[in-house]
Length: 215
Image (cartoon, rainbow, N blue to C red; front, side):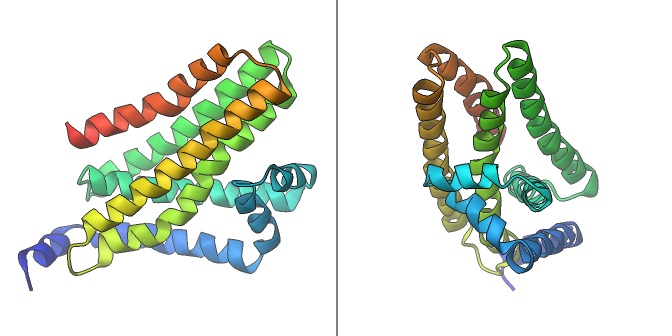
């Protein structure tokens, strides 16, 4: 057994295995029970008509899909962040999970508050949907990457991280495109306000994470 495998064994794999089991269970729910609505949600990434259909069909099923994908996103983001920051104990991973969930809840709260203050609740609803849409899809796509990061006996972490970066850049670019398109074309928002939102709630958190990882 090489040194890399020994180092991996030294990590508390039970923590990661438990979270991965939960993640796999959530994916199974989406695939087995809510495949129709989950399919609409994922297709919304590249076609607005699917997003419109998903929003029109707002019901108990879409609410469950929203909850499941939110949990899936939170768990897989936590696993990736824990790997990048070399966390391996329950306390650090739990704090990371709570922080991830708290960040997204704060983002939702800010958007709802702004929608209430400026009386643009419909815009607020769309902003929340599209803001979380790409994060939730990325969270689902991260599952095989997370498996590779934690459970391969040979080191292909660089390949997995490179794949993660590619997925993230593509989805983040799509998110910026949809925000800009909907904000300017559908609601006539000033590009300055859209840029301010993107810098504050979308780009700045990524810069903070990058600072923690690389510095």
